[in-house]
Image 1 (cartoon, rainbow, N blue to C red):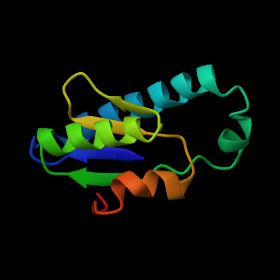
Image 2 (cartoon, rainbow, N blue to C red):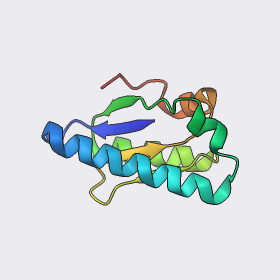
Image 3 (cartoon, rainbow, N blue to C red):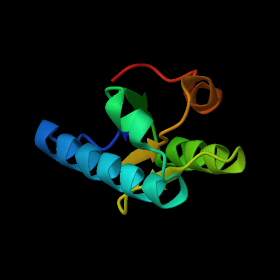
Length: 101
């Protein structure tokens, strides 16, 4: 799951670059803790982008994800948050109220 702040007014190119970097970092970190990640990688690796309204909201999402044991990585600018890979039901506990980007 990719959560992107909309209050920063990033260009499309900047958003895509940040989102791509977060996805790569999430996959790299997940490989360290789950060497059996191959099934996820072979299943198409769905990536869904969601809107986040503020720095406070993205911080709360990152904290909640970590509290329930999900991998979450927030970029240096706090513009993009990656959550997972994990089962959709687990990620939905954190992101169910967010709208699609």
